[in-house]
Image (cartoon, rainbow, N blue to C red; front, side, top):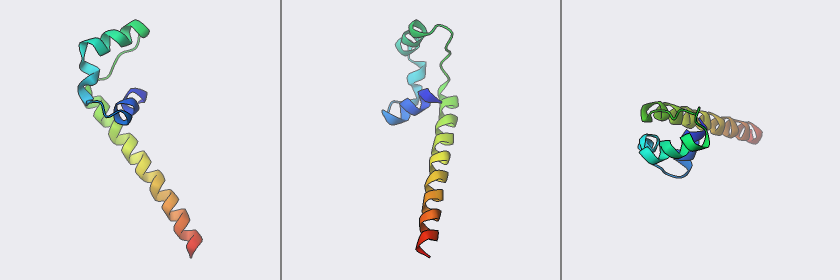
Length: 68
């Protein structure tokens, strides 16, 4: 999920994981690491979004209960 986080934070395209030189660079860093396909990355990004949204709602609920 770290690669998906990097893609989101830097506004990289989802297909970045399919670029030849990205794959080559990652392989040179760690040959055993397998980059995910863009559809799998999309699923991870949706999970990150839902997790962030849930955390924001929890903070807002706590804040609202303090104001009552």
